[in-house]
Image (tube, rainbow, N blue to C red; front, side, top):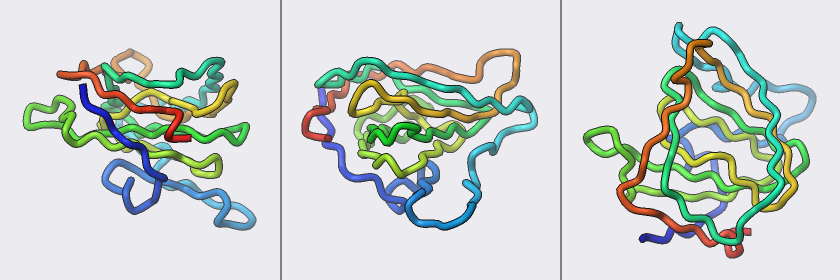
Amino acid sequence: MSRVIAKPLTKEDFAPFGEVFDTSQFNGSAFVQETFIATDDAKRPVLQMVRIENVAQELTIRQLETHPFSSQTFLALDQCASLVIVCEPDASGRPDVATFKAFVAAPHQVVTYRRNVLHHKLTPLKAPATFAMTMCQTGVGADTIMHDLPQAVTIDIASAS
């Protein structure tokens, strides 16, 4: 089992995987550009509210997910920091554990995963936590694909917060 140390999320470090929009860096209104980028198959925009009631002190990851038809965006509604966990695919498209990256998203950072980016599910650092999630869906299923890892990866949440 390998361990990954989380570091603060930056636009530059996350650029290969998606977009980070900093809500503390604008006045008035602004567009989060990559929020609803999708294939022609995913025509149904979705806004889902997600509430997490419990947080583990250590996180062992055995699966990642991808969204083949749409980007996916998370916005903290109650100013809660969260873990953002991504990795690159290997030559066969499976998760390459050696490329795992873990970031701590500040409460004022909106995170958008690009379509097909391997990532872990929403993981707040405190509970309870409420987030808004947006993506486009096909309406026929297969909008989320789960990928088993060849070996588990552990992240110490206590040191990340």
